[in-house]
Amino acid sequence: MTVAIRSESNIWVAPAHDLPQARQVTFSSINGVYGWSGIDWTPEGRIVFTAGIDRSRALHSMDADGSNIRQLTSPGFFDIKPTVTSDGHYIVFQSNRSGSNEVWRVSNDGRDLRQLTTGGGNTDPHSTPDGKWVVFVSTRDGRSLVWRVPIEGGEPVRVTDKDSSEPRVSHDGKLIACGYRADDKSPLQLAIVAMEDGKPVKLFDVPPSATFNQGIRWIPDDKAVCYRDWANGIWRQEINGGPPQRLRGLPEEKIYSFGWSPDGKSFAFTRGRAIRDAVLIKNPN
Image (cartoon, rainbow, N blue to C red; front, side):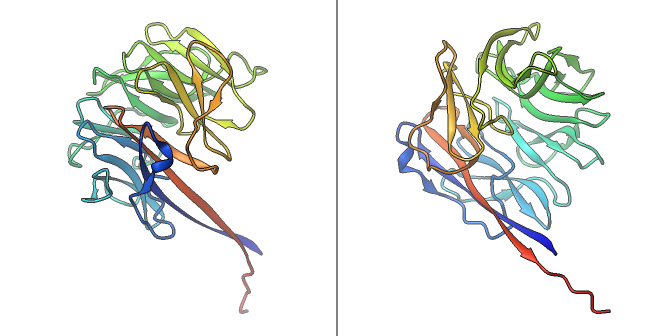
């Protein structure tokens, strides 16, 4: 006996001021998993997203209405968690195409593919607003810290000295929102740390059902940070304080990747499901 798992997901787009008006813009088949492993916006209003191809993940782009889909990276690897630079020229992403998880960069037309990190265990990239750096998580010796590396490649620089995850740079480039643990016994918190020295500026407790996995996003005016719930919607944490609140207007179900367009007018998110069935395999001999 075993369990067979099939997944499906699709991307929806809504006016940022009226989330209940979301409409589905992709229609992938089982295991197509559009947007399951990441989505982001280009300055021109296109959406960069992941899609499943032959048990792998590749980067694609499309117009916001789901038209003009274009494949950007080759299949056969797990290219996930894409983020677009502010000028739209590059897409940085996490991939195992070198044999271990590393941070990569590719031009918006799928050319000039370049590996930015080495050594393995390098994940969760996000570019700074000036387009000069990529922040990422590097896991070494049981510790996960935020580092940054030049967009053109070079020597990485450590940012945080405490366990951190899923870094996301604010629109002004001064702050990083990330998952954070002060020590091994501390609970997971949402941290706002300074880009300059990696020190926490603010720390927020999060609900037990919260997850930061591919899900920390600054709202367009940087006044709040949003992150995913394991089962139902998205939480919103105001930077000025107060308890987190559910982002209203989304379906009452698990949301995967999400994010606002650069002009703040549109909101894209991924809805999906995993289908699990018990399977009996018989030995013919």
